Image (cartoon, rainbow, N blue to C red; front, side, top):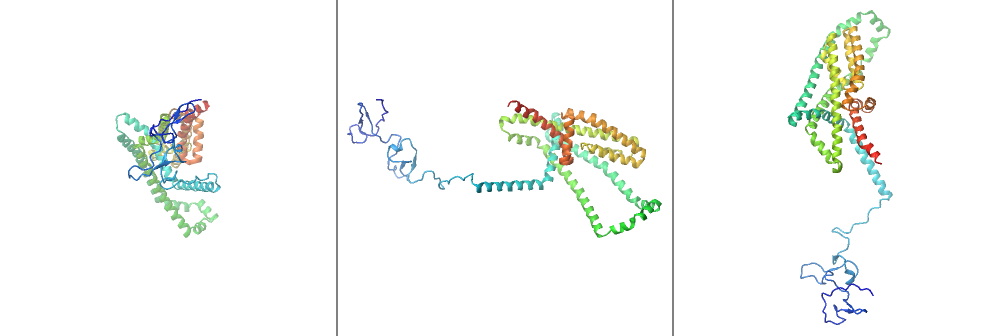
Amino acid sequence: MSSEPVDADLSGDPAAGPGVAGAPVARPDGGSVSPAGPRSTGVLPATAPHSTGVPAAVPRSGSGPAAGLGSDLEPEGTDVGKGRFGAPGRPLNRRSPFLFGFLFGLGVIVAYALFLGVRNAASILVLIFIALFLAIGLNPAVVRLRRWGLPRGAAVAFVALAVVALLAGGIVALIPPLVTQTTELVNNAPETIDNLRRSETVNELVQRYDIVNKVQSAVNAGTIGNALGGVVGGAKLIFGTIFNVLTVLVLTIYFMASFERIKEAGFSLVPSSRRDRVRLLTDEILTKVGGYMVGAISIAVLAGVGTFVAAVLLELPYPFALAVVVAVCDLIPQIGATIGAVIVSLVGLASSVTDGVVCIVFFVVYQQVENYLIYPNVMRRSVQVSDVAALVAALLGVALFGVFGALVAIPMVAAVQLITREVLVPSMNHR
């Protein structure tokens, strides 16, 4: 017969009889065991020590010494599972139709509220995104100045002053021609009207189509109110544009000043096991965005210089202003160069028919050279985006987000290509 564990008797009297607690009990094989009783690590005495106010401990469940073996103890008079504020209730039934409908409706309301918030703040969000895009594009210049020994604050200030100087130069170049041409138009208006009245052809057209009566009937209170509304709308547009430009400029300076802190804050949200890889990919994407900005500015400056030389050779009025217009328009992919060419060609036609024809021929030839030789080579070296991808991205960007979409389309394609090549393709190959 196998031996069973024997509990040592630590509290009984060895001289006591069989019926006394603590006395050993005879086993059939000749051994002896102690009766089941409280262990040395078992139940505490029934009376609380002294008068500390602690109630006597009782077994969690059951009764008797055997039921308390190996179990935790609870103070007497308390309910198991109850905390300070009572026992918790049963969990909600996740399959309940009422709960599902309530959560679904709450989710729809939250999603719609977010949509309204984004829609109402769309204009401000666009300005923030433009400022961030410009800060990313100008950051390589700040990094280069820091390599030359300038502190970051001084480098950011130098770049910001350069940008402000370029804007001021463009405004100074454009405002005088506009003021001069508008003044001449107003001063020459009476003489122009007299010449039109003396023209037999014009008088014949006026009488044939009854233009005078139509103009008089059109000029009424409603027409004047609409005209005034158009003037007020134009003033709002001008002041709104100035406000947007200043907002973007200030945000760009702030983003450049805190660029490294923004990056580190974004990296801190990435798991530490992937943080180094995400950092490398992000730095490469930012480098491509900066390269695109440098390439686009270089192409625009080249177009402006070419226009300035052509305007000087043709002796067109305000050649520097025309060069600034072409350079600014050339920053807009696909359609910007055409807009600038049309403006300069109209100025050339106003000077003489020969000058207008020469301008048209010049821009047709230059755009072919830029589209098929300069632009692809610059973008291939700076952004490493294929010609087909750049063209498709620009068209989709214009269709979806207008001019702003065209500006960010090529850097976005470069980022997508990098992530696809470095993340998606290796992941597919390992499956």
